[in-house]
Structures are given as structure tokens and as C-alpha cells.
Amino acid sequence: MARPIKRRKIEVKVKCDDFLPVMPICLDTLFLEKDELEALRLKDLMALDQKKAAGAMGISQPTFHRILLRARRKVSEAIVEAKELKIKA
Image (cartoon, rainbow, N blue to C red):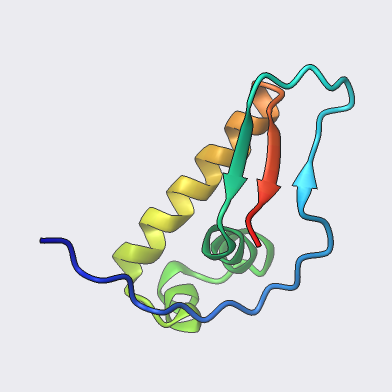
């Protein structure tokens, strides 16, 4: 049985909720969860180490790592394969 999802602290303010390539030939849309956006913000934008970033979100470091990997994969896939990227509300 899987553990229940722990509530996460998310402080990011979304200014734009989607990314669309210049040439809209999108075959697919990817959805970035708010916790994935927050993980990217803390780790890549604010340059926090994973332990501090996980603490800021109120989750364990391994959970933070998994969220960050999912987020980076989605962003990379959207850029490389010209897919639309939307942030879930």
C-alpha cells in the first residue's frame, strides 16, 4: 500500500501558466504540477541544496529528488520535442 501524499509547502507565484513553442506544431501537452514548479524554483533558480529545498517544502530529501527529476524531465521534453508545457492550477 502506498503512503498518502504529504502536504507540501509551495510559495511560488505563477506569472504565466503555459509555454508554447514559437511554431505551434505541438503534438502533445505536458502538465507541470505546482510542487514540480516549486522544486525547480528552489533548486535551480534559488540554488538551494536539496536538503534545504526539501525542508522548505516540508518533505523528505528523497521525495524532493523524485519531484525534481519529474519536473526536469517534463521541461526538457517540452523544449526538445516542441511540446506545450502547462502549469496545473
